[in-house]
Image 1 (cartoon, rainbow, N blue to C red):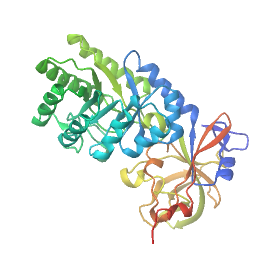
Image 2 (image 1 turned 90 degrees about the horizontal axis):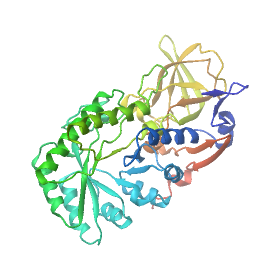
Image 3 (image 1 turned 30 degrees about the vertical axis):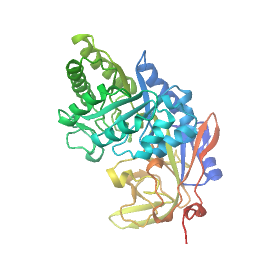
Image 4 (image 1 turned 90 degrees about the vertical axis):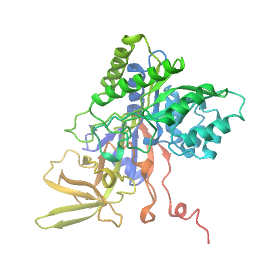
Length: 423
């Protein structure tokens, strides 16, 4: 975090107060160089040789980010027709796209096949049957991975665990459906089964769960490889690396995460020399810390002997994570960042919901209406989960670098809110 001589927060060489004046608030600001740096750290620490890093688009996606990811040489993981459309509209190479989702529609599967998406990650028997029937119309190989719920119960919020046995995602480990689909796909003339995919959850700060993931999925790959005399080409380990949201939070570095997975895979390779291509799908750990949301303070309410509320011009509509996951954030007064923190404040949003609280009991200098509040580490799952609840327009998003700012998502207007309405 940088401050200038006026005591203003500086992001990507840009004065946050000047950004708010020019672009209004709420405003989400992305530090382009930090995103690029994180992409390069992943490539340098993991994507050596045939291994791949695919950015998880659900964390945040737009045309400008797709272009940046392409320039940095990453692959891309999409989970819907809308995300796929965004990637294609940005001219992201379709052969470097993985298409996920637990309920892809026939239209989405056709869209992926028409575009020549590099790999479809098949989640269940229903989806496999759709893909098999539709793939016959294409005179080329269709590459796929099978997602498997490995039973790794990661230590994270239960809403964002995905790898346990009781999950809506993936084939059950050891189930008859998985046996059936592996055998059928290997016999199919159009489909090319590359291997298996797993994802154990999100915002995971302990590396042990990732080691378990590697051990179980390697064992699974060996089992089916031996059973069908088949060489598994790829193992996709998903993403999930957590990030520090608060100054006191501990988290593993990108290098620690990548190195842990590579070492765990090397241990498996030592058993029989088996080393398929490894793919990981980080999202949050690339984009989260690069994002800062700027708000203007409005009303201030004191509840004697209880707490003081500071209301801002955004809230759960641009950041629902506190309401959904009890997520915790840190903030500061971007226009008076050097002032001493003297009081606890609870940061409330403007939606008509008691639960629209961004931060509980945070130390700040004496807050005044009109102050500029910066909430840190809001780059992941904020704009991508934003809504128009209470008919609030979604904020603008700017990318900053070298003291220059460019709008990458325009602010919604009131006219946008009724654009699709019909009388």
